[in-house]
Length: 144
Image (cartoon, rainbow, N blue to C red; front, side):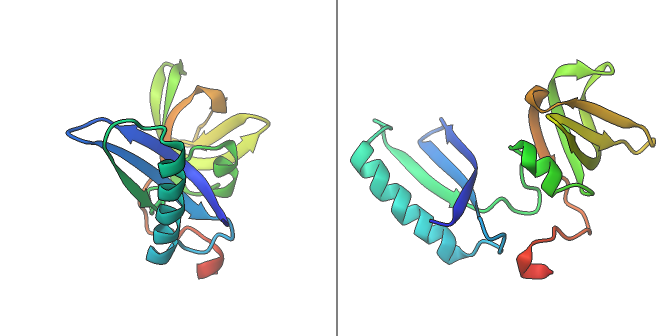
């Protein structure tokens, strides 16, 4: 369909919510029409396959400015941007980091910390990561 999955979550609450976060593969900003197209297609597939047996709401959205970094290539694509990262295993005695993404070397992610030092850890140790809202625009084809 020309979209890439960023994140899929099934949240239990008062009523289950299936949240699908997607982006265009051509790196143009997502529009309301894009979300509507994905919703229609996913709804049809879920009706046929019926993987969720109880009632739920379907929510489709774009990653937004504080997008999660869910794939190794995200740390290459968003090199130079500030991110918050939480690791599953302590690195240099801590699990939470906020720094500038420096990219990757193999499967190792590197952040430049505000103190000036670099911190590196395997991508497989990342629990959560997301860009930090800033004045630096995220470059894509729609704003180059």
